[in-house]
Image (cartoon, rainbow, N blue to C red; front, top):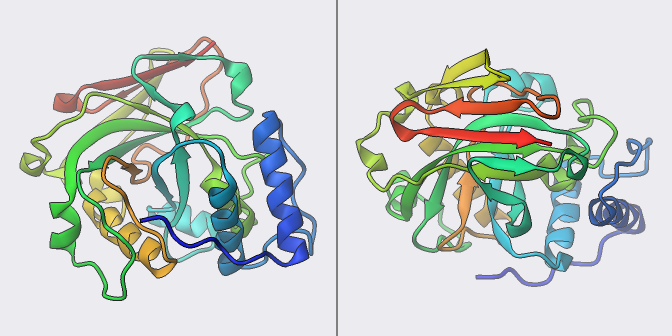
Length: 267
């Protein structure tokens, strides 16, 4: 299902791609793009992302979707979500104990993830909700690690954030649930605590009204770019508990109720 090799980037975008790739490979951060240095539109941002994805040497195991709440869309000045790839070396099982030094930013989001059991390749016809959900095999309680390659989260430059793999730094996964169709996902509540203190709670309704709506949006957004979702890949659907950054040594716990807990500590 791999897309054909992306077209060569214009020099400005090629320089931006190389800058992001170097920062991610070396594990350091870079200053924000100055005017004229990086992508200036979402189309250009996704062109950089596709080029980087085609060159990346790590196993591509899924996608993250961000800006799925009205609050975050307003913060970024957008009217729809955005997406980025997720790679095998930065997907961890809960409870995870990770080196703080490996993540320049340690911002956590509590999210529903879903594993696909069938391919959804790129095609001309839009995917209907029933088609997308028929391809889903499991729901997984999860936390996304948001860790952009810039000195700060570029809330004022969404093209830079999208080009940088959607600022994905990794994910921590809990126990999968194959009986997910029995769940009322929009009403399902999740609570996040850090260092034993409650931080924020929310429900699935905060992400496009329903985490499953996020999957439908992504299947069609990818398809429009000649990409798809592959069997075995996971999709993270956006935060229900905002964005919170624990200090090293503090345990962050996302409580998904009957679905269990997801825990990570940066040491």
